[in-house]
Length: 302
Image 1 (cartoon, rainbow, N blue to C red):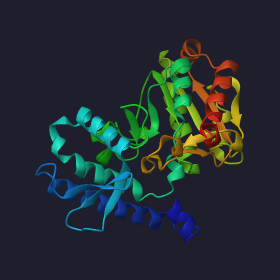
Image 2 (image 1 turned 90 degrees about the vertical axis):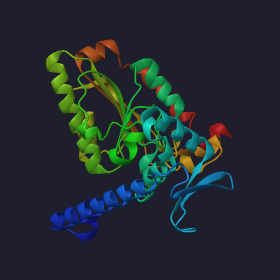
Image 3 (image 1 turned 90 degrees about the horizontal axis):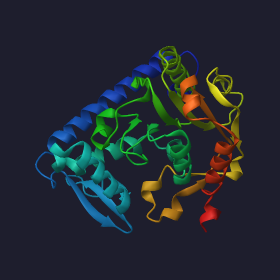
Image 4 (image 1 turned 180 degrees about the horizontal axis):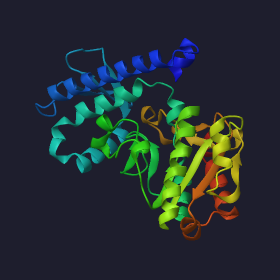
């Protein structure tokens, strides 16, 4: 879609072809790198301390291709890898480098911000949420989640794309990248799943956290959904709440990982009837969420 916007109207097919070529080239490069990294933990990828961070680089290209990551996040990735890909433990460095290069190529760290820990805790306590529909190995709260790239992320706990995820019951957090088309597709996919679950009596719930872009189709779709519970969605003024930065893995100090939201946010919970009975959405939930997001403002940590 970004290629279409750049190239102007009528270029959808050309942009799609370019995107497909880029994806195929990236996939081939990843497989080559994985294939060359099977000779133990040394392999092609080296790890060095780089100031307060760790730097992973290709040994064949010193000073060239590399990624940086905090010690804490590298330890998290190692733990996830040990749990989900124990049979290929020797490839940890290679897999971390492949995964991080994939996300680094996206840029726009703000697209990958995460809810503050206190926000996740409120959602866990009130709505039973222990799963994110849009996460990455770098910012995931839990050890199972959906992410954009199954090929690089599965070794760290991803079950693949949300758009291929078809639960019939359960409670999930949904904070998609701030791309209008992705946001709309996410709401529509959730509604399709809710319709199927409603027909079978399943308790299915999605807590959406999205930018308050009220004139964009996804916002209308969410706020006017037949599955919306709790009355009007929660609205958070931009200056009144914060997120965990998308570049959190590059910040050694936990307090430096918080950022003020770039936009006002909308929190809306879509549920089947059974889910609404099991996990009620009310003013008390929204009050606790408001306080949790306010606590993520950088000044609150100072």
